[in-house]
Length: 323
Image (cartoon, rainbow, N blue to C red; front, side, top):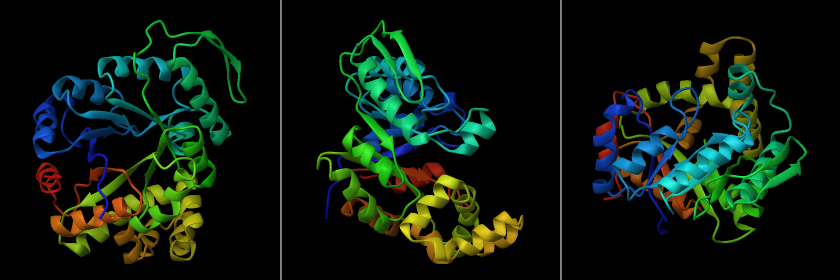
């Protein structure tokens, strides 16, 4: 049985105002959590919850999972990362990703062009900028002219790359300090982790793991299908699961979704796919499933508790704690 480097959880907690989450955050330390990882979709931005946590719980490691490389300019990402690295020396990890066409194009009105190159270019720029270099460079997807951070953190943060398929997984291992992965099963980790680790056995692999500690299997499956459909119909996630070999299991769902029959699409997501992608069961069963992710190559689980099947999120955070 492998031991994780850290044991994290996703913040902020849904349905709780940011100014009311202090007690939740401070309790994480007593419960044995080591990390908090922020997400950025349609709620809080990635940096604000971590900035609050840096004051409320100074021992926790802070990570973004992820900051999209399209929705902020490269220099702004560098500024935000430098500020948080200075506020929490040695405790901040910058996770960057391409996000998806939905968030980038539909919600932000930005062209989702050449995502691999944009990620590679942003990663290279950030390495230079966060080391204090003055950057003048023409990359494939943008140009920078004479940018230098006026305040450079004493410890440049590690940079992790959100990765799905081989190209980005190789980039994460070759030029990043590791990878952030999500919406995959414990068995899938055995496929993706070796690609990252081929570039160094010390690479960190953070997995956002969706968890519902409930023994009400039927309700978890029924409600979990909504979350799965929302993600796996996004082109980048569809391509990911086709690459993982789930095409035959999910083709019916994709066809019904494309035809506009959302109800039928949900019905066609097999139970086994829900069980693979959402950890559920008693807290003890959930712990065992999370351990399988670690045994297959995840160094840092970052739990994302879903409030399905009547689960109380705070109770679940306590039940799933490492100690």
